[in-house]
Length: 160
Image (tube, rainbow, N blue to C red; front, side, top):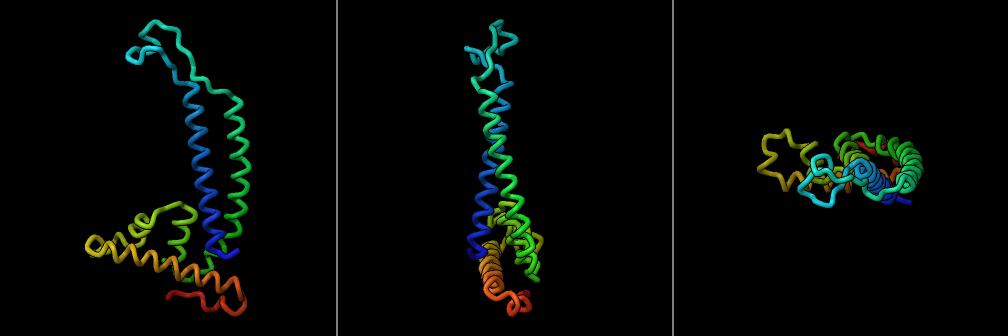
């Protein structure tokens, strides 16, 4: 599998983890949120008996077990992919890949991270967005070349 496909798969895994964590949080929060038949009255003030949302502990356990497996996969992929990305000698390329595939940042967020401090950032915003795209293309190409021939290509992985 080429490096871009592996990084994309890792990104999707992180998104799945994030979604599952949010579901779990919502379920746990829902279990402690009192509900009344009259939304204008609180459970305490309304004098009504409050009920908890119909969320079962079983649903929470299922998501927790799923997350445990996802965390193991994430850690394995991270341990394999992080050193590969660190092969890039150009820090902008390395930072860009780490931000996109490990921190789930958007192209706009990455442009701000890498170039937001530049005086002309706002005036040349579209150019910096394109630069992020170019860095991505170059970094992926370098890492794929390295994967095809590690001994020969390692020395050529440097800033463009």
